Image (tube, rainbow, N blue to C red; front, side, top):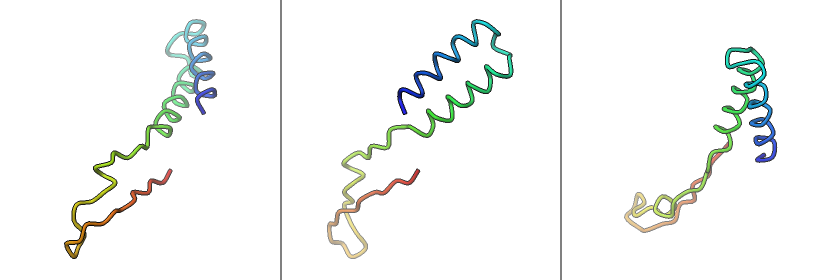
Length: 69
C-alpha cells in the first residue's frame, strides 16, 4: 500500500500546485490519502499488552490481542 499512498501524495502535490487548495479534485485526493493513512496505521501490539498479568482465576495467562481491519 505504500507505493499507492506515495503515488497519491505526489498526485496531490502536483494538483495542489496547479489548481490550488480549494479545488474539488485536490480535496478529494486529500480525503483519499487521509483514509488510507488511517487504515494503514501501525497495528503492532506492545509486549506488555500481549501478556496479561492476571486472568479471572488468578493464574498468569497469555492473551493474544487480535486486531481486525
